[in-house]
Image (cartoon, rainbow, N blue to C red; front, side, top):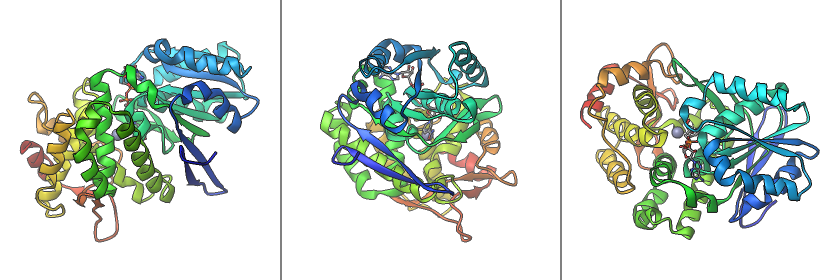
Length: 372
Ligand SMILES: NC(=O)c1ccc[n+]([C@@H]2O[C@H](COP(=O)([O-])OP(=O)(O)OC[C@H]3O[C@@H](n4cnc5c(N)ncnc54)[C@H](O)[C@@H]3O)[C@@H](O)[C@H]2O)c1
Ligand SMILES: [Zn+2]
């Protein structure tokens, strides 16, 4: 599958040169079964999705399998971050057993990043791993979560602490499903798109600044261009470092603080909102450390605010508590907080020893948070 609408993502796996396609195509949901069967023939498909997405788009997904003469069922869970849990993973796998799914199963993750991470982890662990198709339905999942193979769950100690790399067999992006997305969920997706530009592509950042109005209006062709460029950037990074032994860490820009804020809000704040605040805080932190060009935090804050995202720490959140969660983040080593930082828009920062996750002191982090 090549051509205008397809981006080929090569993923270098240790033993073999494997890869997968990302299809970006209006109306692709109607061809979900064909795309799935092409990469994993002879499967019984389980479409894992949350109840909101099931009610909106589950029918269209199922219809595509029906008309292709393939067996499929939807298996749904409650919407929201709270479902990215061991309990929901257990309930879903028990349900697959009840429904008689075996080694011949294929899993479709239909939904936002929660469905992608959770269903992806089910696919990674079910019968020691069965083929996974990512069918993202939020902007955030389209530009980021569905591509790259990270899956997992949150545990009481923090986000994504239990998980697995699970390369999808194919990613099917149908931008038309975004039309049912509530406005705040739609805007949350911009955070990861800005992140991609901030760490890897200064021209794309300038493009985002110029197109903010069209993006907020959900102008179709502007949106399609955004999705494509964001996926290209992520694909380029992930292809060079699939399992995050180095460079891939730059995609965590904004996430040490972002995850800590999400955790401190009891996951009341959407991931994209927390990442927006996290990027501004970490850009400030970089400026404070003399690593980031002055003015970078201001520039990011102004773009993110124009895109309708929060850029300040919520007033009821003490910097201490956020720093405490950051200390427990899985990016840390030797119990030092680590952050992915930028030297200027489009360029990730590196330590003298070549590391992409920069150790920072609690105090510098707290001071940067206090300055937001
Ligand atoms: N694996 C990765 O690389 C990666 C990258 C970024 C984020 N993430 C994870 O993604 C999660 C956040 O994803 P999210 O923001 O998509 O959240 P989400 O999956 O909870 O979706 C947000 C809300 O939108 C609803 N929804 C989804 N599609 C819809 C549609 N088309 N129309 C109407 N409503 C729809 C959902 O029911 C949900 O209520 C976080 O857990 C984050 O950690 C993972
Ligand atoms: Zn993220």
